[in-house]
Image (cartoon, rainbow, N blue to C red; front, side, top):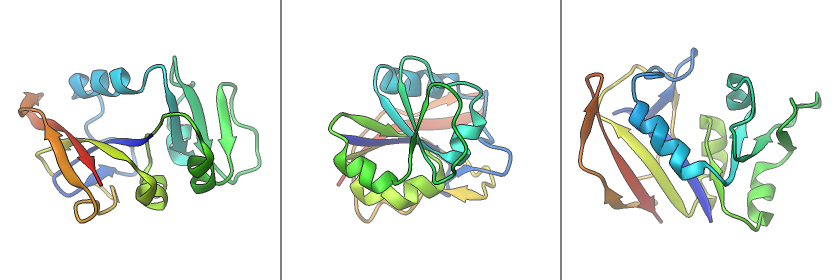
Length: 156
C-alpha cells in the first residue's frame, strides 16, 4: 500500500522557501504523522531529506535522489522513485516534498491529508488531487495555536 501524508493549507500549500510555515504550531499533527509512519517505510525527496538532521526514528528512510554524493547514515538512496514504488512490496509512506508528490501521485492508494483552514502564503504546493480521489473520512475540526484543521483520508 502506497500512502501519502501531508499537511496542506487552504490553497494546497505545503511549504515555502524556509520549510513548513506552521512548524512547531501543530503538535497534534506531528503526533498524527508519528503515529501513522512509525514502524514503517518512508520515502522523501532530496529537499525533504536535507531538512532532517538524522533519519526519522523507528522507520526505514528512503530518499528519492539522482545526486551521486553519499547520503548520511540511516538513509537509503532511491534513484527512480516511480520504479521503486512500483516494485516495493511493503507498505510505504510518501512524506514529501512537492516534486515527489507530483511525480508519484498517480501511484497512491491513500492520501492522509491534514487540511489547514488558513492560507500560509506557501510557494510550494501539493498537486491537484480532488478530481482523482474522493474523501473517505474526515475528523471533526480542531484548533491549535489559532489554526483550525482536520485529518482527512482520500482514496481513488
